[in-house]
Length: 144
Ligand SMILES: [Zn+2]
Image (cartoon, rainbow, N blue to C red; front, side, top):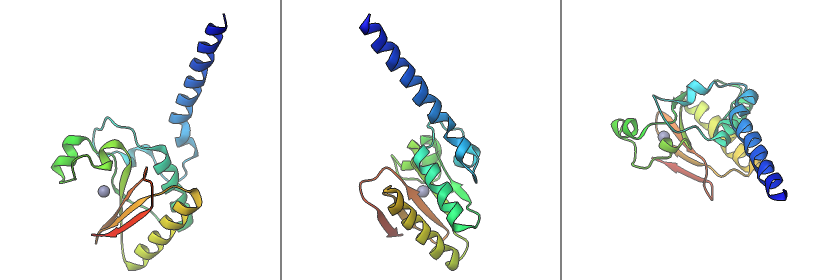
């Protein structure tokens, strides 16, 4: 009997967590799921990444264009992405950088929000975009 209740509880908890996993989009103010999917991918985007970038967008008070989101392995290879890139597991996005002022503000809000949330991120600065990845042990900032 207790065994049944135990498994039923696990099943209910699993269903609830699944529900939350899909519904985090309800709280996203500035982005649609489509913006995170570059082509026909299989891997879902990391919810922490979406929630994080939504808040950065709120602080920045300027548009954020995601130039690349989740990529299939095939597509990642085609665009010259590194093998095993964070893009292929839904843990990285590229953001278009419009000018030097935007670059500075974006960098500031990415880092401040990362520290506020205790969410380590990796930023690689390219001339036209930032690569931002989550699920790291420490925050890392690079210039390509
Ligand atoms: Zn990237």
